[in-house]
Image (cartoon, helix red, strand yellow):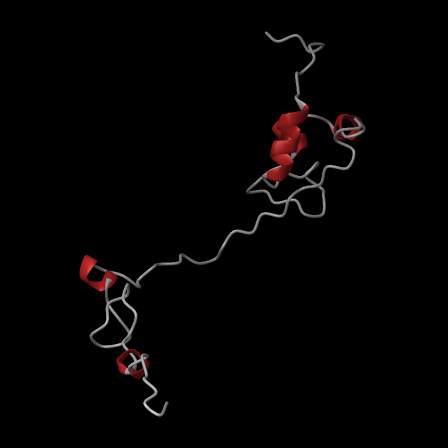
Length: 115
């Protein structure tokens, strides 16, 4: 049987971590999400104790981080095999090669014969 007068040990770093994970202070907070939870329920504290908890200087300005859960699964279908890795937009050129242009064929050494 647990003594009702025993105090809970709550660490500041854990509160900050929970708030960063989307936990709100109470279950009546504006951004409360029942799927994530709140500090009040996590530690099974009455609302007045939660208020007292957040009066600590290191917790006073800690805000809940908004957690955005995507409503989709992103599938990377751009490569399907090792052959496709070297696929090219320019026919005959692999992804690691530079395409050959007309400039590559011009002779850069010109000789002046009018001296």
